[in-house]
Image (cartoon, rainbow, N blue to C red; front, side, top):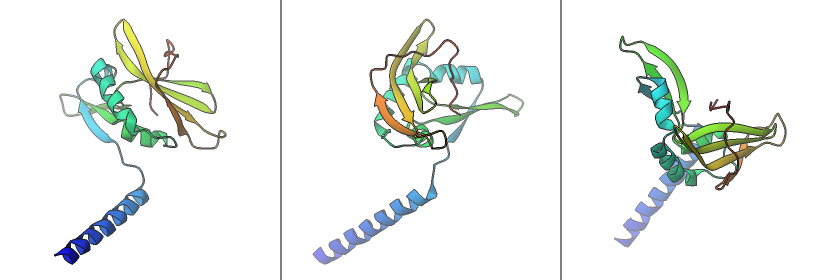
Length: 161
């Protein structure tokens, strides 16, 4: 019985290693599409305190060196697709729980601020900071700032694209 158990464990380990290597070759996971009735309501919900709590729970999955696309997947971003009562589709927008805005301190640094916005109260709880070596390089996560001092500008970039 012991040799059968060892054989099963070896087969499981081989399948696990194979599946992880294939997953790495596949590339990025496409974001889920979520139908919404009103884009403005979906955006408001994505910036709520509840959404921020979800983001705070997920930020532990974000690691140094990740691409912006990898961060969006880890943080549970979705593509919201506005659907009309006549069955037609309206616009679509990428939404991520707790995402407030992007701030570009320099051409080589980018910060995504997360928090919540409930009317008169806006709280920035953490930031994901990206960097690149030069303008031709890809963005990668530099660090998670858990005590950011910056706020979203009045006319900030609230898009993820």
